[in-house]
Length: 243
Image (tube, rainbow, N blue to C red; front, side):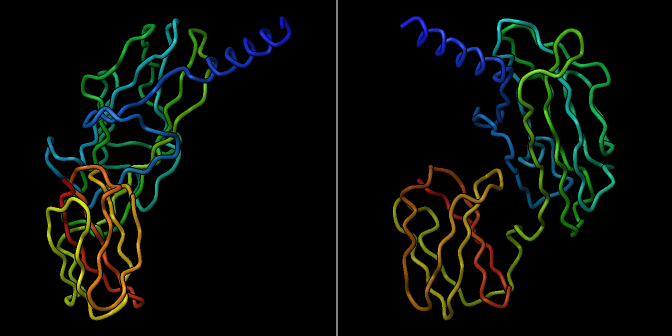
């Protein structure tokens, strides 16, 4: 029995050594997972708009930790016109392989750092080039040694998700406020991709030519963007609200 208890204690200690912090989406208090992608169709949006993505960082341990955010990857951008705010430090440009802030931010035991934290694509609203920024949250101890497991988030700008995309004209959907089944009318076979308000793809289904229905009862109540595409790559984007 003592050996089993010791083994369980070692497992628990190992788990706790990795669970140093958690990041939450401030809009709905959901926990952000490692490798998560948040996608937006807008650039240069307003402060209160979703593409100004706000987050909290909480120390989940009984000791102080020290946090920095590193820029691990940039796609189709040099890092300019991207605002990163964390722990009272705001930068309107970021650099690949750099970490911010320069001095790691201390977060006390069980405390949350929240005020003013955001990632925000401030490129011109007319920008049509897709871009991504991959950022890594990393905790340190008081001596500057990395501790715990880092958490990476990819901020994705994809203008093709815009509601103005209307290459297909032969698709009708109803109702736009739906509880269980969405009716679709099309004169060709399509693929329908559902994106939530953070731009995360949550559902993908095939839509047959003619009249058909899509079961949306497994989706959480909120606004969704649906991107329909045919086998030649033409697309149509529509919005619905699942109640």
